[in-house]
Amino acid sequence: MNHLRIFARNSLRRRDFSLRSTSRSFCNLSPESNRSSYGIAFDIDGVILLGSSPVGGSPGALRRLYDDSGALKIPFLFLTNGGGLPESKRASEMSQLLGVHVSPSQVVQGHSPFRKLVNRFGNELVVAAGKGEPASVMSNYGFKNVISLDEYSSYFDNIDPLAPYKKWMTGQDGHKETRSRTNILSDRVQAAFIVSDPVDWSRDIQVLCDILRTGGLPGKEIGPQPHLYFANDDLDYQTAFPTERLGMGAFRIALESIFNRIHDELLEYTSFGKPNPFVFKNAEDVLKEIAASTRTHSNQGSNHFRTLYMIGDNPKIDIRGARQAGNPWFSILTRTGVFKGKDNHAEFPADLVVDTVEEAVDFILTRESAKQSLL
Image 1 (cartoon, one colour):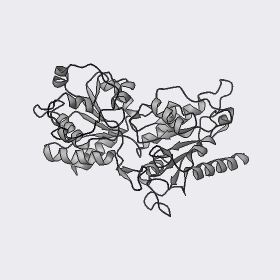
Image 2 (image 1 turned 90 degrees about the vertical axis):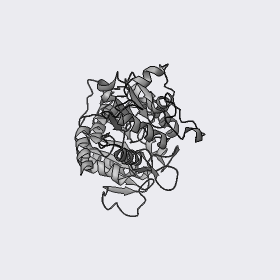
Image 3 (image 1 turned 30 degrees about the vertical axis):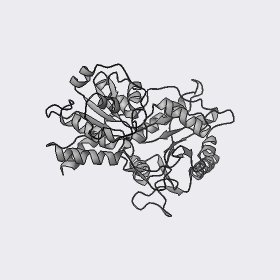
Image 4 (image 1 turned 180 degrees about the horizontal axis):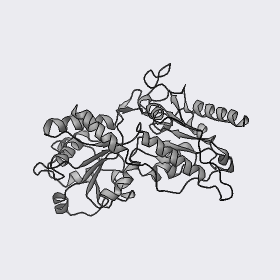
């Protein structure tokens, strides 16, 4: 019951944050897009990519959303719970993998709402955990005193008792500043951000418990818990491996279970990402900005979307979120990722089930063309 109380309180707090990007550097839209009354949101893992390889004919499907000059015809974005890289770097990566130009404004990641917390923690000491470049992500959002958990741990002798047995290097984040060890050991951590899937679970759980139990001063006495934020709460997700892999939600369960066993107070945290309804409301807002970004003052089109399509592979995340968001969202479930069933998902049925994203895009373009011909 206490866990439900905390979850309910966190759910209320989640509604306070918008994912809307402050960036205005959108792709060029062709004039045909002014007549578009629909937009598309694509999940990435299991829909567009498996690992780093395109899946389901995704490059060809996406090219159909551009005209011959490379200008965007149909407003679309990538709506993913994944992350670990700045939006600009992820957009460049997606462009190379898929052979189309992807703008940073078309990439909405699980940690994108963290930028809205910069007014609260921008000058405070915060730690960022996860694969990729978590500290660089937060620094790009405007956090001036952020340190990766990899680097933070390195300042504390013997904080990870298993370190001598680990033969790998987890420190991949290029964001590193010259810091005083004395300052690090004496400054309180005000918040911890789980930006992407952690790599070294044993060390990260140990150090996060140290931070969260002591009011942000590992090795000191018990103190008030600093704030804790998760970019998403996905239990599992699809990679190139045949079956799903454990995600950030699994890490959260492990951390919470251990913390609640060793501490008198229950862990408090806030999770972002799909299926939260505000994610889909923000996606609609971003798609409107993409659609309107290159319209001249004399050629203004309507920003109203009759239909927004969510193409995902995870019924509990993508389809559930689109269903909760309601009109004008239309959910399409692919079989290239988490979902592999013959029929629709029983608990969170999609509006349409297809084998691949290529089939999904073909359906959308055919359906919308038929609508247009009736006008």
